[in-house]
Length: 421
Image (cartoon, rainbow, N blue to C red; front, top):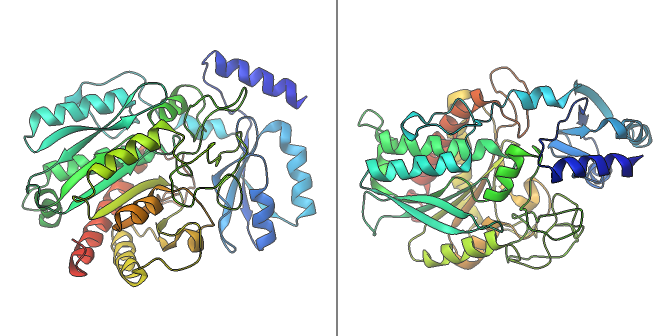
């Protein structure tokens, strides 16, 4: 029966018809033991299988698991055998997806807004519009994709080449739409900040910004148009299962399988056949190396878990300079909480989440030796408590962006004080 269902789903994917998630249930799971984390993380994930809105990361925090209708009985058995405490939080995942309002038709660049999620084409048109409107804005190309698309970003440079450099990478995981939406919001705020917003205007005037709203272009468009839960690239690696997790594919303690990435091509965290096997990670890393003498800080935007992370992912050993990483992180999360009350935890990837290899911020620190942080944006509406994981409704774009920009002001201020910028 599972093979039949998988075959039907694959026919839909081939035909590029949007896959629906009607009657897929979402359960909140209380994670009370390390063994329960292992059990949940051992479940098969991907097309027509289990998935997570909020991943099982640490004892004492809740995970949210997506259960397809045909796996409901299987999940009930898993609950019983592992003494899992669950609450049904959503009986139809499609209802949450329908709230996201992806913009199906392009908007004129001057009408670009943050009440919907835009296509890469619309985002790039808006970036080109900004380059026409602001002399300090230049279009930059960070690399290429498997399907032959360009990874487009902008350089905002008001202060000259001697200004400290900050690099922002967003939407490397395809389904995390709010990362690119918040990135464009932040771009707009930097360019329009007035003297009434001196801290933001200072960032715009005195930082050399390299910002890429959509790094995983192929995957993002596939998640918009065909399979909303898609996370990986779109490289043709297997007959049935495609793509590599681009944040397990960088040449930093890369491994085939093990505790930091999967060697199963169907898994969401498949690390690829080799380090930098993906054209997206290889070409973007090559571009980053051209900026080696210009960058002081690297930021990667992800969703969703209310976390601020720094290296390492492959080991519990402290990163060199961990005291500065910690001090900056404390200032950052405190500033983020101040506006809307969203509470972030912070720490190394290995300690705050789980072992993970081949990530971008680890590679950047390894090769460039600069500060590198990963945000995991809010997983819920702080005001109402509604949980949505990476399926953030558009009304969450602005509050998320506001608190993240507040935190970046504090991050850069503290980095300056500690002599990193």
